[in-house]
Structure formats: C-alpha cells, structure tokens
Length: 402
Ligand SMILES: *Cc1c(COP(=O)(O)O)cnc(C)c1O
Image (cartoon, rainbow, N blue to C red; front, top):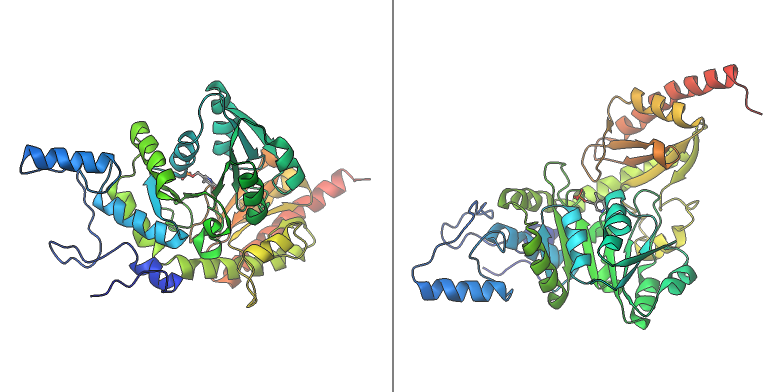
C-alpha cells in the first residue's frame, strides 16, 4: 500500500495518515500503545548496535526515555504537519520550551524574548535562566525596532509566541526571521495558539517551532504533552536535552495526542468559526470594553494576522481571545460565576469552551472558544453578561463614577 502522507497530500489527509502505518507484526490498524520501559535483544551485539544507533538519534529503540515506537509515530506526524525535517515530543509544553531553549543556550549567552508570553515560560526565562548565567531581555515583539535594538553580540536566540498568551499579540514571523538571521541567531517560536493548521512558522523563516500539545494538538483536555519541530540537527540537541532532563512523554499520552491530532483541521475550523462569531457579539456588547481577537479589524495587529493566517474565504484566526468588561473585578467575577455552559478553568485549546479570569492581569478574561454549538456559547455569554451588568449597575448606583 502506498503511504498517504507526503507533501503532495492535503493537511487533513496528513493529519490522519502521516507517521502511521499498520503495525508490522500484528497488522493492527491504529498505532498500538507500546507500553514498555525497555526493549530486549537476542544478542549482546544487537543490543550494543541498537543503543549506538538510538543515541546517535538515528532511530531504533532500547529504552523508552530515549525513544518509543508510539512516541516516534506521533513525532513523525507532527514533523510532517509543521513541514519540518524532524520533531520531538516531551512530557508537557514546558518540557518542550525548556529543552528547546536550554539546548541552544549556555552560561554567558543572551536571549531576547517577547515580554508577553505564557506565565510559566516567563518564570523560566525571568527567574531561572539568570540564575544559570543566561541573560534575558524582554521586548514588545510587535515593535521591530525594539527587537533589533535588544540584540547583542552574545545573543543566541530570539523567542516569541506566534500569537501571545494572554494579550493576543501577533508576531510578524517573516520580519522577525529577517532580523534574527541578519544577526546570526535562532528564531524560536511557540505556535500553541495557532497550530500548524493555521500557521507553519518554519516556512516563514523560524528555526524551531514549539507546542504545548496539551492544547489544540491533543484537543480534548485529557493529556499533557509538548513538541518541538525543526531541522534534524537542532532537534537532535533538543532530544538529548529532553533525555537528560527525563522529560519524556508516556506512550499512553503520546497515543492520546495522536488520536486527538487526527481531527485538528476540523476542530480548528470550528474553533475559528465560533470565535469569530463570539468576538463579533462581544465587540457590540455594551458591558464589553475590549475584545482582543486577531480576526477583528479593531485588533492592533490585524493586518499582520491577515497576512500570516487570513484566508480570502473569510479568515481562520483560531479560537483564542481576551476580553475586558466595564466595572473591573466585580463584573468579571459576576460574569464568570454566572456561566452555565462554558467552564471556568485554566488551559485552552480544548473542545470545551474554557474561560479564565485573570485578576492579576488587570481583569483580563482569556477565552478559549470550544466546539460547542455557537448559539449555545453566545447565549451563555449573553445571560452571564446580563447578570454581570446588574452588578455593574448596582456599583454605579452605590458609588457614582465621575
Ligand atoms: C500552556 C502553554 C505552555 C505550557 O504547556 P504545558 O503543556 O501546560 O506545559 C506553553 N506555551 C503556551 C503558549 C501555552 O499556552
């Protein structure tokens, strides 16, 4: 049978078929969960050869921290989807972020990062890296002059999220790649919010692309996972780092992620459609003061987003947005507490709509719009905003604002 992947096939075909084939021993149709820690050999010579090959990152298996067939199938699929030579999968998005960066930074090196990134990535970069002698400068990633000015002779890496968590800033990957490569440094991007279905940063000049596969790639909120994709020479270093840090994924979680990613295109279409409709509804709502969604013309980076991911058929800008309500903390909590269909939770990229109020971010509310019927999502927001508006009205009556 001909393999159904390869660059000539469409994205949905590759999301289903790439990296997988019927099990060569049993002919099992889906990739089995190779739930084993170790692999056994007939002879000492075979064992030695397998270890040598695997530790040179040339394939083969001897111990599941270093490599496992279920994980390898997922890695091949994700490499295909990102248009990468290779990909490596780890225990979580943070395992991916930490090992991708640590593999390319030593004491004395300098990193330029967007100052709007996922909170734990920020802890790693701002608190942990300086203790290890890695200097870090944060910049406004949408200000290309600011980015250029931050680069020093010791800078090795420019790091950004393609669409930032939580402020929804859009990184101009094409322009950032030019800046990075003029300086001879790597552009490493976290593509969690957009996924390879909407944006393939390697094709725009990025050197490494990272995912919290916990989010859209797995898509069902049932497994933690991370991935890094790029040229094999870079990925070999990340593999070695993941191996010594012991941040391997379990074969079962790799299997869950693989099951999820097969439907990535359908889910991203639904997330994008629903989010566009919800953003339109919220932008027109009197209690809503701010809607940050890259598909809206009012978003400061809309033109960049349109160039990078917009399609003429109506645009697919993903399922993430951030909103603010009139009345601040009290209104935010009243709204959140009144939701009936949408769930209050951290995390994102799930088929369930997840709402995350952030009192420490000036009462920004991050919304990961799920795949439920859009009428149900909008109706839930509408009734919760009505309840919050009553709280806002009471505040107004008790304490008139000038
Ligand atoms: C959640 C997230 C991470 C971390 O991923 P985990 O799987 O939770 O470790 C990294 N980057 C972004 C943009 C995220 O949203």
